[in-house]
Length: 72
Image 1 (cartoon, rainbow, N blue to C red):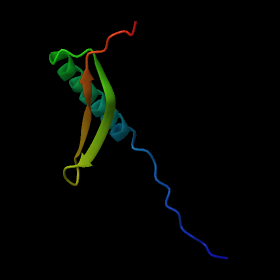
Image 2: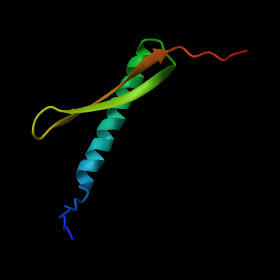
Image 3: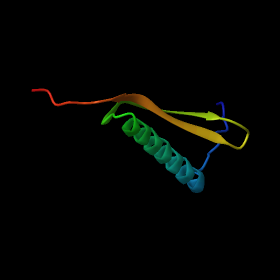
């Protein structure tokens, strides 16, 4: 029999909340920028994140700003 040690990691609730707030802020900025460009929708919206130091993370939101119109 082979025994393997498996680390059990917990959730850091404050960090999870901070990252959620960061995603929300990035999305709001993306929406605001699209509106400034005259768009009324964003398609193919995506999030990206990257470590910018040992203790900091950046969150990006991006997509294609469009003027959506109803199909008749």
